[in-house]
Amino acid sequence: MKKILIIHTGGTISMKEDEKTGAVQPDEKNPLHDTTPSLMNLADLHVEELFHLPSPHITPMEMLVLRNKIEEKVTKEKIEGVVITHGTDTLEETAYFLDLTVQADVPIVVTGAMRSSNEIGADGLYNLISSVKVAASDEARGKGVLVVLNDEIHTAKNVTKTHTSNVATFQSPQYGPIGIVTKRGVFFHHAPTKRATYPIERISKNVILLKAYAGMDESLFRAIQTLPLDGVVIEALGQGNLPPRAAKGVCSLLAANIPVVLVSRCFNGIVQDIYGYEGGGKQLKEMGVIFSNGLSGQKARIKLLVALEMTNEPQTLQQVFME
Ligand SMILES: NC(=O)C[C@H](N)C(=O)O
Image 1 (tube, rainbow, N blue to C red):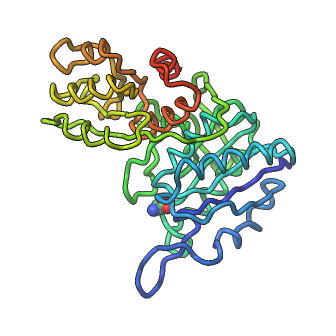
Image 2: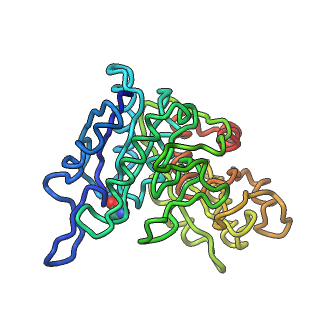
Image 3: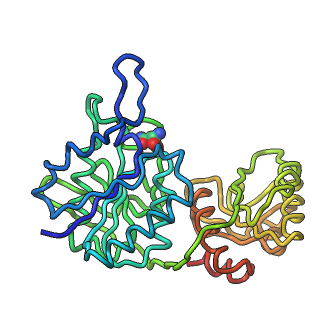
């Protein structure tokens, strides 16, 4: 049997619904511990309780602690696969952070649940079992960090939470899942493209995410320049365009040497320098804005946080966002 490490970090998968108030909240004792015996026939399991946090409380600091824990355990204890349980709200950000920063070459699977442990149709134990199966499968190796929920295997790079409450919430809108989990096993039907990793030691920068909208002007850009600020990601319109006054705001950020990364608020496609009008992609590119290659705003923010630990040189950053 493969030696698999389960690391709990919290989230609904580790919560209970209060019968009187109906509030879903962390329980003193993680209910997932009682489920461990039903997983014992799948792998040689080792369990670590790292955090007990709802995922809106997770910050890049916790992500780095988790990354370090994985590297330490894989190196020292010869762990052959890792499963992380996590709240679903920011699960995709933690999964992508790990995808960018973990060097260890073992399957890493992140999972969660939409229903807490004592609700009818609770999906936590089911997702945990599927995830252990994936982490223990030989085919999961070399595919980057994976997200497994609701019988589907997604890449950390493409997956996103698409529904507030449905158990089928995790989808990869651009490319779909890369595999499925069934009663008979784990089946991959796609191989992800090459993965780049960045061996950072700390996470210390402040990166802000803004969303463009019709009539956006320079006021928000002026306001954020009063903060300690290392980088900005903008979810632009369509193929990568901004209202003219927002483009002026971008100009002032770039003049202050603050890197600006552009993604689209559309959840399919990539941003490009197509349009030549004021605020269009061509003008933004000429100004020195960094174009991303299909990442969502929240993932581009994670990537910029990681990249800024290595450089703030615009050309190198553009290179990183092409990878
Ligand atoms: N389903 C969940 O896990 C949502 C919860 N609010 C969390 O992210 O911790």
